[in-house]
Length: 455
Ligand code: PHE
View 1 (cartoon, rainbow, N blue to C red):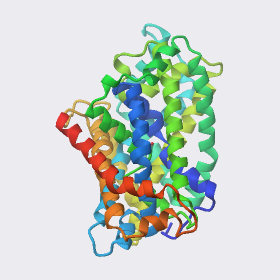
View 2: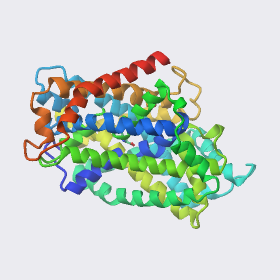
View 3: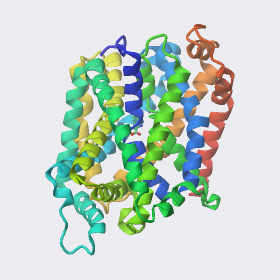
């Protein structure tokens, strides 16, 4: 795909961008962050971060991509020739690549759970586990502490990515997003009803929706900010790259609202599914924290339904697809860079970018198994990469974006992009500019600094 490629339809453009945004971030990462960071208070700050900071940063990225018409580095080069701003694009590409290393691992878990649901293995009771209800957390623990199995599935997912990416934007990314994203939404809605009808559902719902403001600390705020940027695919060059495929009449402000609301909607539904299930099955404690939460809790919900296996297989199938529409968008950033900057063929670019992942993702996969004791700054490599990318690199990248668009880009640049060169009236324009120039960089920087001082 050259930089001149475009999405063929409006709905395809939205589906692919929503497909990039809605992924494991909202389904897998969000509930575990809510659980670790005080429940409803986190939800509130997260939503505030999406609207106040996420949407303006997204608009900055869209403008750079469509105005610059190239990959993350190339767009900066085109807009600010001879200046060092391309560095912001390079940082974005590096961040996105590091995210890919552990994201592939979780996508591999999802794939494995789909397979185990189809074969029925996931729902066979395990012996020596006290009570049926805790068996899924035991199974998850067993699964990820094994070295080989998760690795095989990670490799399968990397292989699938390679296949899709070789087909390019329209045939690969757009087609698959169009069909499967809407199905995921419908399925999630159905699961919300099941979860809400569980006994003790109200306790979980209270944790998710009734804020305890004393739980808010600087570290909770930085984590909510990180989650907002991660789930909106911000600060990683993804939206710059995708926006370079937007036609000139795409309404950027409207698109940013559609994408953000879909992300919040999915994350919210996941909270409504997970937390009632957690309290209903008494899973608040110990082994369920962090990355394994969703995998240990959701099968409990499916087990309540007739045809558990079918629901479970469908859910994990769609989640695998949601993960893959995100991984291909992340990989596309580096591939577009290789094609546009290094003048590589698409095939060579795909292979150069994806082959190293077989090695790097291996480290992240083993970090849950026999390498779990190898720690840097008190975290295993999986958690460290997650923390470093979402909570440090994304905010820094986003500050640079805002500084460029707000202060250094050609004077009428943002105005032109947001109004499609005067073709439409963007009423929110002044507010967006104000946030990008003044509010976003200062707020993001102060959140970053105060979380550092607190650690
Ligand atoms: N936003 C995606 C998710 O929530 C993850 C992602 C990050 C996608 C960065 C693209 C770029 O799963």
